[in-house]
Length: 391
Image (cartoon, rainbow, N blue to C red):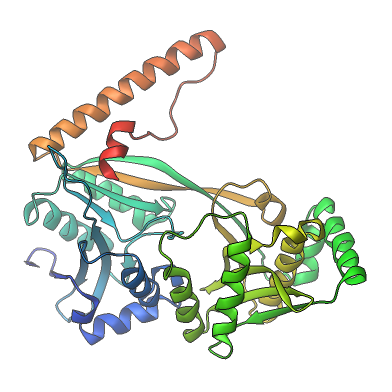
């Protein structure tokens, strides 16, 4: 599809193998800014998570010179059809994804590209009923403009809370400065438990970075994960695939703490742009009294600050209380729930959401009358019935 008004071309690919070379090269370069929006990340996601029954749609918008303006990977998951199936399009993301947003050319005409994209959604693919994009940083200008353009085209849009995100901007400080800025409780715990571990056991920490010994890294990680309190991974090949992918791209910082030559704690960190992202962590509960997780986190923080000279540490998704000890800024990442009102099912979904929100507001008003609190909603929520339909 070509838009004469905006001179923007829309191409849709359903297989990564069909992407033109110039698109792949652009996408690979984008990973230097944000690894979680890069070609390698999505390639591994499609290979290890997306089933053969699912469909992917890679929207590539280009200008008249065949320069990539923006890429938006989408996912149509094959779920329960039911008596009255709802056609839902999702961003190519799930609980493994710390961030999701369109992949932009920094020189693109953002409004022209978004206008063309949303026009295409509405007029050239009219059969969809709902769309979800998450988790997104709506503080990003381009993402907030996407909300505006969706509404301008008459689509129903509701932002909703997706997850919390804890980060700390280092402002060119060295590790010593970062360490001194942490709460005294954390610093004291680290010193005491490391001393205890040194006195009672022989331990060593190894940081895996490249393809050398990568299978040992994966084996050690899985050994610890199996012994930890965490549930089994729903997609068993995703993490090993991610570790291998990151090692090839020189983004891997996988730390393993060995006690008496056996893995006791492991953490998967990923270099993403100027940030070090703490992606996965686990430890053997048998060594909990030594705070092996704290010792390993401190070691990796020193490694990425000193050797990778990162300017930000990012604990990614989750609002666990311990994260505030390591970070200093909490952000809220949002999701966008979009409904197509040009379809009968879309009109039904909108009516259902509006009814749910009306009941929610009435409930909050009654509560506020009793407790005398402000009833303004910072963001809306999605009804339970609709959440079930989106699964």
